[in-house]
Length: 232
Image (spheres, one colour):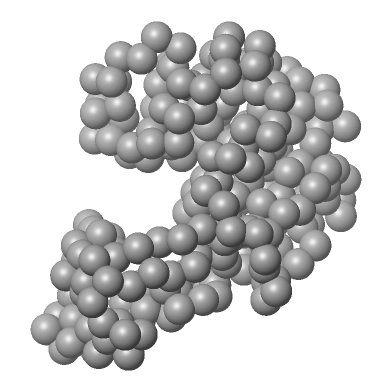
């Protein structure tokens, strides 16, 4: 297993990677679904898919309930305590969320993932790499290097301890486009968890770095690692 891959050649939207999996006629769990953007895409593709989408933020969970999509059930719970029966899920998805679990609860989350998966069921854990130009920008005001290392080490340890089997590890990158710095600021800096860092000096520092990449409309390649784990 590798924390970082420098020579990524596959540039795709993640949903296309997901749809290479056989998700039809399956019960699917998404942990840390956020605004349910990926949840909705998975639910609208294929057929006969039952999706349970969990979120720990109560405000976001209430917003998700208002979506009222027939084949999605929203639950208020986290990966470290999943409100589901043993051996009940075919596929689990986590998109950019495993590293948000407190370090001391990561192994507990892995045990919960194993518990709810059916035998031979798969857990798809997608994590952004601490690498690339967009990451250099974001790290100025929101540095996630250590939490991403912690997440990788927890997954790697689970494989080494045979809690789950590494079915496949995939590296890919997606294109992220910003119309200008103001667009970047809106989408990446004006978020609740970043507000305390947004001093005038910090904004100017980030803007200077953004403009060093050309300014104006800018495209970044955002790298990811996917670990697909199997319950054995």
